[in-house]
Length: 128
Image (cartoon, rainbow, N blue to C red):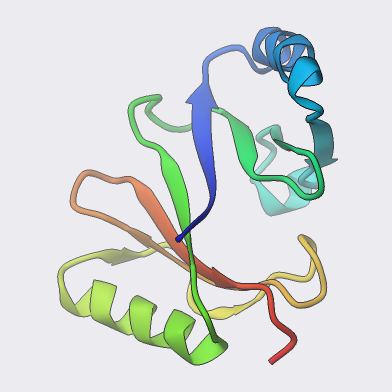
């Protein structure tokens, strides 16, 4: 059910150097850096084998104690329903349902902040 997760780091370059070396024996590497135009200038990079599943995010603009987790949805309709239910339950919108083609052409996700400010996402990778 967990699609990917992310941690906030206080020194992106130091953490990147650490994870570059620590991930190598697992056959994983830094596969993607999100263009800074989509992150308000923060450095965000994803590690994995076939696709990014473990993300580092520069925490200069947010508390390090908040985290990100993405849950796998089986359809775009489930993403939409997750977002609506989370908002109805008191979550705060952090990016409504929609395509995020800067990740890949079929990336359809929605983001909410839980009561503690954690960024919880539902994502579907299917074309429809």
